[in-house]
Image (cartoon, rainbow, N blue to C red):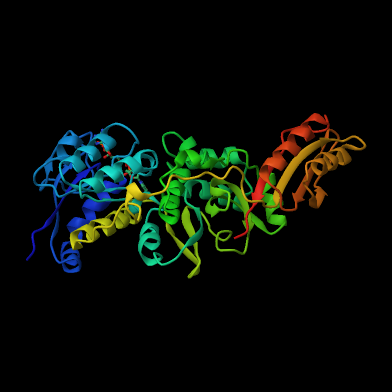
Length: 428
Ligand SMILES: NC(=O)c1ccc[n+]([C@@H]2O[C@H](COP(=O)([O-])OP(=O)(O)OC[C@H]3O[C@@H](n4cnc5c(N)ncnc54)[C@H](OP(=O)(O)O)[C@@H]3O)[C@@H](O)[C@H]2O)c1
């Protein structure tokens, strides 16, 4: 039989333990599928004494992941520690320099350093694979780089942060305000140590920037992702959207336009009967549109031990089979610099505001919008009390920049009692 593929795993948390379990429990299946045994030779984590629910006695232990990465008995360095600087980056760089292939689930690291790491790895003849970094168990990297390689990709969209989707669907289903559901999610352990990574759209933005690189053959440009979190989405917005036949999702959209690459991660309204609108709880969905294939919808668990370990093992099996794909589907050194679109493609917007209950207030708002070329499709006053009048406007297609100028002008009218909420209505 061919020589075994030897893994060194750094990080024995949720994902790392999942990988250890699969390698231990499915040894025969993995060997049959790849034509060689897949084994673990060494592991690393911060605390050696922690009970992780799996036996680690067969494996060498390294306190230092860099030492693990360069061991002679490791062929593939599996980085499952996380963090975009420090140990993960140092160990991956050391692994590549020592002639090892790398599998990682670390979207933050790749969003910030993926370009440089891929170039270094490819120059050294090593591969870096990262299926688990985007949308957990959904094999979206494989779909884009392999199955859809014959397509010009026109748009990639996705709900790729399960925690945000849980918060938004729970608000809708239970009629609870954002703060209450956020506290629930925190108590359930759904949020990252820095919750802004989730609710601020940063984690999902990391993933979108990686998908863009593959889809459009451009260098990873996380700084070019326009980020807006879900913190300002209120239960009122969710109810109003539902009344109009929409759901609110933290939606990532990447598309190449005549004006350049558009990448945005923001709360959007999507039709409630669309696949994205129907997505419940912590599930993820990625929608890919190609010129030949049309629309492909991928749906599945975006996080958790099993789904994420499944994605890591897909990469490991490819390497075991001798399948050596470039990180972003083409040589990293040949990826084009991303030319950022200076303005987003036009779309209708949902606009919610509160106005002083005085004669002519609504007319002033309509004038401010009209003066900036934003035309109104629908308008309604939702409720009414002594102090203010909540008003909802749906615009015709407009540029976000024009809408922002109109909102500034609306602020100068003196009739608004709070900052308006503007959400894009995405065609899906
Ligand atoms: N959890 C998911 O569902 C999921 C989904 C997709 C992608 N990911 C990504 O997968 C990676 C791992 O996530 P996770 O949820 O498994 O994290 P986790 O449960 O927090 O586990 C992290 C592991 O890394 C170890 N570690 C951290 N810093 C280290 C260092 N300096 N040296 C050695 N070991 C170190 C920790 O050791 P100790 O246990 O001793 O503290 C722990 O075992 C991250 O990049 C994450 O973004 C996770």
